[in-house]
Length: 157
Image (tube, rainbow, N blue to C red; front, side):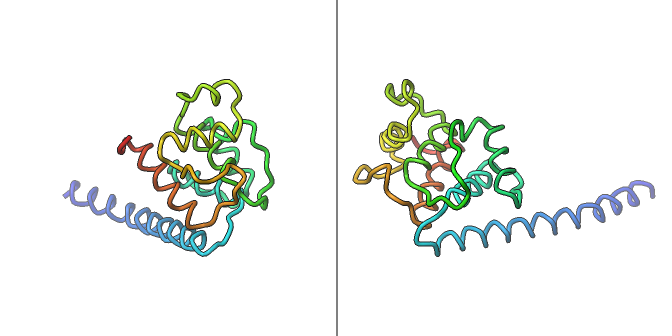
């Protein structure tokens, strides 16, 4: 009898947690859908997407999301404003820190967006026919972040 009561209590406790998780999943899908429709994304969008990739709880305030990335060793030296239009070099710098793309000698020495972008090209994350100064669209950000997520989870090299 006690076992049945314990199981019932556990089930009752997990129902709100499942509903809360489903709510977060819907928020994530909505966020990605909003990103896909943007002609150009902002640095704030990219930071929020990285927090999503890390599997952390997204904060409503931009600087709290930046703090989450800083704690993970990402955004070192990047101090852009939330509404700054994101460029491929900015995103590449985040990616290079996150994936630890340290096999590029120039990136290891200089740690600039230019060489982070070149390291991302070498790893097949970004296209070679672009510049680190190019603005990034929502669709491009989603494509790039899916490659990052796959690589981070142990996908193909």
